[in-house]
Length: 195
Image 1 (tube, helix red, strand yellow):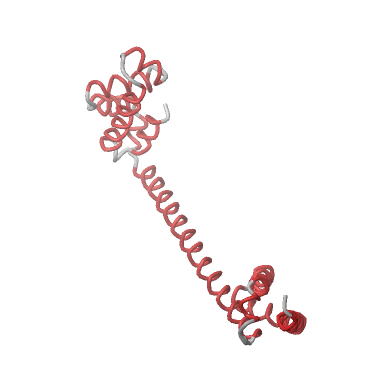
Image 2 (cartoon, one colour; image 1 turned 30 degrees about the vertical axis):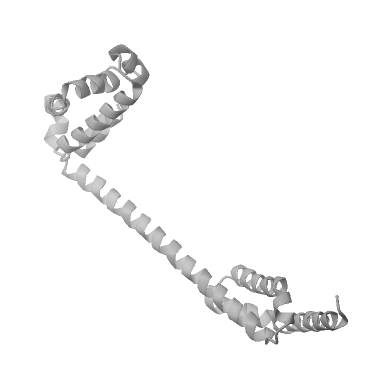
């Protein structure tokens, strides 16, 4: 390494060290104004210093104002951090809102569920059998064997000489049709699905 390059690198190293010692606490305070958490602010500042140190070779051949470069890097990292936090919060809000809507739907469904239907065994039986009987024949047979007779899908496939995939497909069709048929009686649908 030529002497001039060594000298330039030593100057950069000394300048870098002096800036670190003199400005590190201020840079942490600057980052904390935006990212709030001290730990996040320290990570951002340390990453900015590490990035400048790792790319120092490019700075040795040109004159750069190191302090301005570090603050620009910290600023950009804060922006990236905040952008990420906004996306995370929006996703959390979306999930919470979907959960709230789902709970409200379940609450409304149970509240609106016909009390007379619950107290009359024939009412529930008739409603369930009507829904099951509305299924196409093959679909109904598979559903009855699985949910009412308690047979495993692989056993149904062997018994009916069809593939397990066909059984799964027919069960999906049954669920979809029963969901439509019992849309006003969500608790019955849930009961049927978890037999």
